[in-house]
Image: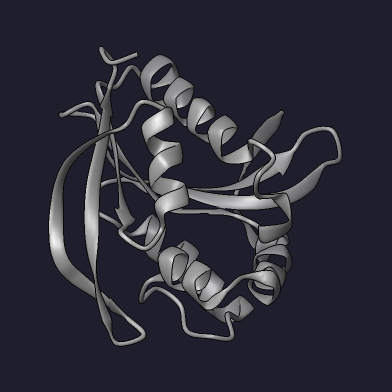
Length: 173
């Protein structure tokens, strides 16, 4: 089982440590242009402050493995739109040593519960890069449907990558 806690300065070191075991692809998929390596506590403080200043609310969470209490990941719930009853998942990360254990699936289940049941929203969406097939398949298994592709919209190691928009509606599950 997993739990979520609001991301704060007590999580910065775990966040920084995860980059040590992450691949370059992991970091690009997760960080985009938000951070520069090496990630520092100062960058994380700016990240938290910027989240507070967005026109549509942004919530930052640390993913906790409940049995051990270990911090195993991070997620951002962004563009929280009360009027249109929608939210956007971003900065989804499970540390490398915790992958393949079902935590991503559990995180998506928790996000669906939070967005659809607790918040009463209708739509949940996210982007996934074309070079992250593991995440793409996991999102499909969680019920997300591809809505479109922004062709060759990101560049990684000299290669253009597609960005897939996926969504899930409250009526889909």
